[in-house]
Every structure is written in structure tokens, then in C-alpha cells.
Image (cartoon, chains in turn brown, orange, cyan):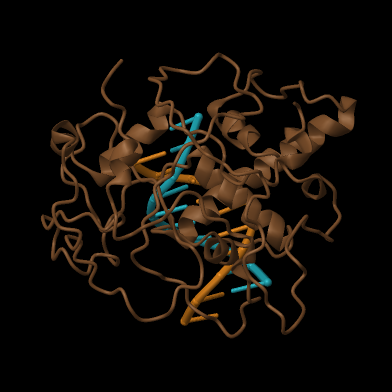
Amino acid sequence: MREDDSNWFFKWEDELPSPQELMPLTQSLITPDLALAFNIQNPHPNTHPTPPPPPPPPPYPPHSAAFSSQPNSSAEFDSPELSGAAGGSGPGSDEPARTLKRPRLVWTPQLHKRFVDAVAHLGIKNAVPKTIMQLMSVDGLTRENVASHLQKYRLYLKRMQGSMSNSGVVGNNSSSGMDSATDRLFASSPVPAHFLHSNPDHFMPFVPTMHHHHQMAAVVAAPGPTHHHHHPQPQFRHFGSSPPNGQFEHHPFLRHTTQSQVQRSNSGPVVPPSYLEDLDSGNAANGKKILTLFPTGDD
DNA sequence: TGATCAATAT
DNA sequence: TATATTGATC
């Protein structure tokens, strides 16, 4: 039962977001009041004003970024259309993408997983913010978000290399011992071996090294046996004290496809979205699943 | 120019 | 502390 070691690659985003992670996530999508009502079933599926839905065909399964305004204040009307929320209270409420201050991005284990996977597919040398961002295809994610995270991630890798070369056992904390939240986040997604080596050559488990013209898509599709993700919906409070390998349970993640900022650059390395896997049904027309993410308030 | 990186700010 | 922003450089 411990084959996750080698199969971690196949479990794309199986990790389970802790309740605390879901909170900010949901909060940014729906107001507390809404949550209280909880009965809301998307009165009008057409509610989202998504202004610019059309233009460039978004080839990749977009992902929802998890934004949280401020943990302290009760999330009120925050809805930079990151999630396409229909706030309408914003300045203009329709062309905010620019010159609008987005809430801080929260790098959830899921998001980070996606990040790591993108980097792994690109290889360290090609892994630059813009490319990573495009590969991740997360709605609302900016190049700077990725750049910032990448910076930290590189430091983490460097640190890890240093630790490894010493005794091979990663238990040596250089600076103030103890793993910080950062370490845990990074630890939640295994670092591909080639990252730690100076080997620029990278390989990916699946992903049929697309030859020039043969870009097949859809490959991943978690080979697992019918995954009936049940929803125990337990009221997790906090996991054990050590969720090291972070093999949590499965949870549906928010998926909202609204806008696509993927710009086709002629000089771009052209990344095939083949590796992306879809979690649960991502029915944009059906937004009621989002509600299932709410902590039933039952404690 | 635009992107990346490292440093710095919040 | 985690992420955003800035500034130098490519």
C-alpha cells in the first residue's frame, strides 16, 4: 500500500486541501452571507457577467486560482473577477484586470502541485515565470505570482541540495531548524529528482514527447481504477501533526473557466497541454458543486 | 521592449 | 512569513 512513492506522478491533484485552505478559497468566491444561505443553487446560471469569454481558444483546462483577501476581515465583496464573481461593486466592474489590485495569491498545495508539475515538464532550464504560468493555465494567475513563487522555490531546492549532499538524509535544517510552513508546502509536492541534479536534461513519465507534428493530447487521465471519489465530508479540524507525504484524501477543487490570458507567442516553446488532467467535472454551467466545498459549518 | 532574476518592501 | 513590488540586467 505504499506505492505512492512512485505513483505520485499519477495522482495529479489528489491532495486534499485542508479546511483552512478551502476557507479562503470559498470566501473569495462567495460571500459569507451566501454561504449562510447555502441554499443558493446558482439562481441564474447565467449570472456571471463574464465579459470577454471568446477570443482566443483556451486550449488548456484552466484552473482556479485561490485568492483570499484578508483572513482577518470577513470577506466581503471581493471579487475582482478572478473567479468571475458577480460583485459589481468594483470600480467599473468590468475591466479590472488591469490596474486593479488583486488579492494576494495563496499558494495552496494544489496550486503548488500544479506549479511543480509545470516546472517538471519544462525542465529547470526552461522553467521561467512566463512559461510556467502558461503551462499552469490557472485563471487569474499572473507571471509575477509565478515569478515570486519560483524564486522561493529555487531557494528551497538549493537548500535541499545542500542538505542532501551532506548526509543524504534530509533532516538537517540549516537555519532555524524545524520545517516552516513553506517547507511543508513544498514538501507536499515531491521534487522531481532531476531538479536536484544539475542535469539539464529532463524527462517526464508520461507525456509522449511530442514530436513536431503529433501533438496528442489527453494522456494522463489518471490510470487509476474507477475513481469514485466519495465524499465523506468529515469535518476535519486539522490533520495530524505530521502530514508529511501529504497524501491526503481526494477533494474536488474549484474549477472555473472564465478568461484566458494565454497568449500565443511566436517565440514561445509551445507547450502542449497534454499533461493536464481534469479533476472532477468542470461544468461551468453548473456551479453548484462549489457549494460542496463549504465547510458545512458543522464542527 | 519585454522578461528574468535578485533584492527589497509590505 | 508569505507574497508583491521594484530595480538592474539580459
